[in-house]
Amino acid sequence: MINRNLIRIKIVQLAYAHNISGDWKMDSAEQELFFSLSKAYDLYMYMLQLMVEVNRIAERAVETATNRYLRIKEGERPSTRFVDNSFMAQLQSNNQLRDFVENQKKTWTDEEDYVRRLYNRIVESAIYKDYMAAEEEPTYERDRDLWRDIYRRIIIEDEELDQLLEDKSIYWNDDRFIVDTFVLKTIKRFEKKSGARQELLPEFREDEDRDFARRLFRAAMLGSETYRSLISQFLENWEINRMATMDVVILETALAELFTFSQIPATVTINEYVEIAKDYSTPRSGGYINGLLDAIVRWLIQEGKIKKSMPDPRN
Image (cartoon, rainbow, N blue to C red; front, side):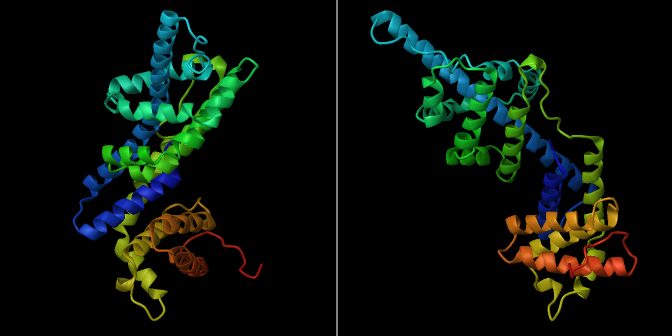
C-alpha cells in the first residue's frame, strides 16, 4: 500500500521538520520515517474497520426495530437488506483485517457516538435509499459497489471524521487523501470467490519500495549541503537563505532522487516533486520548482553528471 508517492511526501516532511529544528541523528530520523509510514498503514486498516463498525451499528438498529415490530405488530417488518450485504459479510470475516485489529488493538469502540452519526448520515442518503428501494435482489457486485459509493461520497467527504482522525494521530492528517484512494482500490479488488482469504494491500508492495525509502532518505539528508550548493548556482539575483524552507527541502530531495536512482526518468522525478510543492508549499512554488529543476537537470545531463534524458524543449 505504501507507494513511492507517499514515501516522497514523508521524506520531505521529515527533512523539513529536522531542517527547522536543526537537531537530528540519522538513525533516529530514519526510524521516525518508517514509523510514520507504518502509521499510514494503520490508518488504511482503521478505515476498512470503520465500515465494519458502521454495519454493526446497523445490525443493532435493525434488531431493535424488529423487536419493536414483533412486540406491537404494526407497520412493515424492518428490512435486513443493508445488514445482509454480501460484500460487508466478506469484509467482516476477512482474515487479515481481523488479525490486524486483534494484534494492534485498534477499534472504533471509543467512537461509537461518531459511528452512529455516520450511520444515520448514510441512512439519510440517496445512495442508501436507492439501494433499499430497488426491486431486484442485490448481487455481490451491487453490494460491493454500494459500499464503494458510500465510502467515496459520504465517508471521504465527512469533515467530522477529519477532525477525529487528526486528534488520534498527528500523522494521519496528511495521510488521509492517499489512504482513501487505497481503500477504494481495495473494495474494487474484492472478489466473492476469495471469501475470508481475500488479500488486502500489503504494507509495502515489494522490498524495492522499502529500499527506495531508506536510500532516498539517507541521500537527501547526507547530501543536503551539496544539493544546496548546486541550487545556489541556478538562483538569479537571489540567495538560497531567502527561499521558502519547504521549497529548498523539496529541491534537495528531488536532487537526491535524481542522483541516486538512475532508472527513474528525470521527468517523473520532476513531476512528482512539483506536485508535492503545489500541495505543501506556497501557491507559486509548483511553477518555480518546475523551472528550476528543469534547468538544473538539463545542466547535469549536459555535464555528464547524471545519465538521464529530457524532452527537447523545442517540441
